[in-house]
Length: 180
Image (cartoon, rainbow, N blue to C red):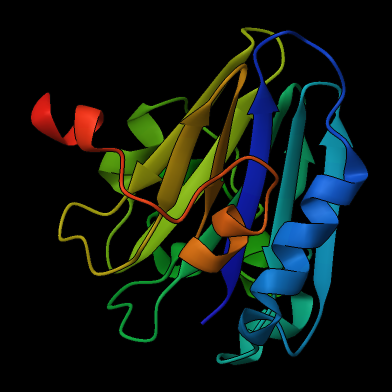
């Protein structure tokens, strides 16, 4: 299965490329067929590719459309991958679905998640609104870990990627556990 990872800095400072590289290296097993990342100011997004379906040959994530940049992950057992979801609902042409690897969707904001089926997780950055959307399918068959640090939030399909960042401890935060 492919993997995603990224960082959002609250202070607006640019993401350090070394941080993304550390995350990518820690979860490299997710992407034997390629890796790509983008940094857009305070946000860095990355995708590791494992080709499973014929459409995966066209995969080029993270993607950017207008002010929105995103990366997504599909699971092995996806009943209806992104590229077969209703073209009308996602404003994606049939040709785009066949040749895009399924992720060149034009995001409809947070409403996008209500149109997706199967196993998936995604991260979408809206530069115009300075908002990061992290989403996971309602069944929870995919993983998406996150860490809210001092001035940033980091996320990844693999816990190893988060633990590769400086200042993130493997020790449990018992104070945070008590608040649950």
